[in-house]
Image (cartoon, rainbow, N blue to C red; front, side):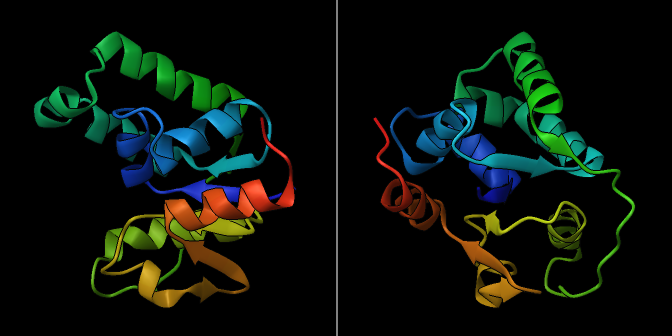
Length: 146
């Protein structure tokens, strides 16, 4: 079974518009089609980003709904201890936490829309880095999903 770290931009897009690749990925995670890997640091970042007024306007989520979503992730995902550190990305050093989480959580994939720092790597220590639509295709091609 795939183990994937979803970047914060995937959560933002996935909670805002239904039937986009990010929202379908979140639905497939909820159905148990892959293991979501995250860390305390990524949960904190997602929480902070999702409650920004302009993001809340985009997603349409209330603060309560955002808190419920973060709690659902905390309860149902594989949450690492958040002890790994990586210093690979210099363009946006904050994205190193995504790589560290993937390594610590033995992820098979990182799913992101970040074209500046993460996607150009394509792979990190055997962990494939994909755009949401490519990860969604991978999930659908490896199993008949209703």
